[in-house]
Image (cartoon, rainbow, N blue to C red; front, side):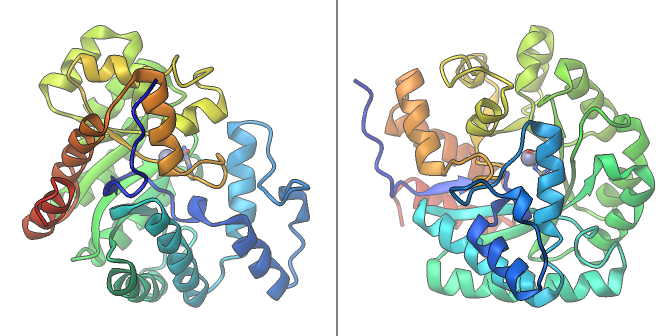
Length: 332
Ligand code: HPA
Ligand code: ZN
C-alpha cells in the first residue's frame, strides 16, 4: 500500500504553460463571447480533443486564438490560479509567449503583461500563491520569431518576469538556431530553461545544454537513455522540470511505473514535478502525486524534498525563495 499524500501538501510548480492551463469551459466561454467556432477542438464530454503531440500543438493554438485582449489574459490568470490553489500550490512559474500576446510587439506585450501581473497580485492576495512569468519562444515558429520574444522579455524583466525559455515542437530546428535569443536573455540577467528530451531524445538534451546553457531543462526525461548525460545533469546540478502525467498521456512512456523519474532521482539528478498543460492531459498536481506515490512508493517526505529542490531552483529573488522554503518545510 502506498502512503496517502495529503492533497494540501504545499507545492511548487515550475513548468506550466499559461494557455495550456486554461480550463476548456473557460476557452469555450471566450469562443462564445467572440462568436468563434472552435467546436472541433472539444470532445463530447467537453475536454480538449486531439490525436497526438503534434495535433495537440494545433489544438493548443486554436484554443489560444480565443485569447485576444489583455483582459482575456487577466481572466485566464485568475482561472489558472484558482486551479493551482485547489492543488495546494504556493509558488508557480508560468510560460508566457509574446507571440500570443501582441505578436512580438514590445508595447503591446507590455499591456498584456501588465494585465497578467495585476491578476497575479490578486492571486497572491486571495489564494496566497506567488506567480512568476517566463517568456518562451516557440520553436516551431522559427528562430526569427525567437528574437522579438527575447527582446520582449529583456524589456520587461522585473519582479514578475524573471526567465526566458523555449517550448514547442522539439523536432523543428536546432538549439544553435536560438543562441541569439538565449544569449540576449542571459546578458540581461534572465534565468534560462529549455524544453528538451521530451521527444528529441538524449541528444536533444545535450544540444540544449551545449548551445543554450540553461540552468533548467523542461522534461529532459529522455536523458535516461544516455547514462553519461544523466551523470552530467547530476554533477552540473541541472534541474529537470518533469511532467510525468503529460509524458504518459502523450505516450512518451506507457505508464507511470515505466516513467524514468524514479531512476533519474536515484542517480541524483534534481527533479521537480509539474503538470505542463493540465486540462489537456486530464491531470492535476494532486493526481500526479497520487500516481507517483503508487508507482514508486514515494512518501510525503519524498514530495517535501522535491518541493524544497523546486523552491531552490525557482526563478525568483532570495527573500521569496526563503519564504516558500519555510512554507514547504513547515516552518511558516
Ligand atoms: N511541450 C512542448 N511545447 C509545448 C507544450 C508541451 O507540452 N505545451 C505547450 N507547448
Ligand atoms: Zn512544457
